[in-house]
Length: 87
Picture 1 (tube, rainbow, N blue to C red):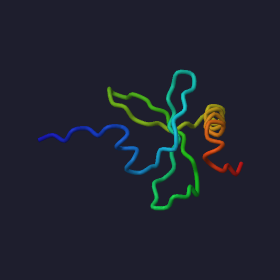
Picture 2: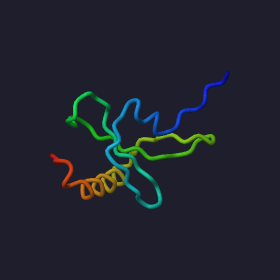
Picture 3: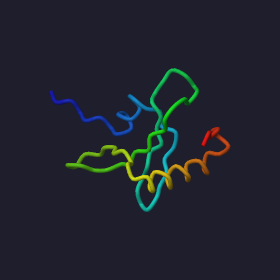
Picture 4: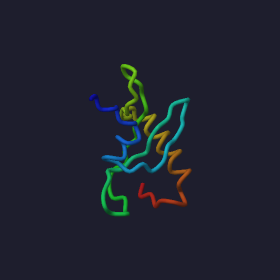
């Protein structure tokens, strides 16, 4: 029997903790940190964009510095009361 494909959110939750989503210019971006047993976020925040490839939803890292900065700044503004930002 063929295994059903995993939902995109199930795949994210296996390795990452989803902090928030940000919409910019009609695209949805996911703010992610590596999943740990700790409640503290200590490390890098990953910004991934939802894309469709060969009919399958997947995440793609945002490598464009300008887009990364725009999305990150929106995230910081939305979550300024929730998180302590060091930059």
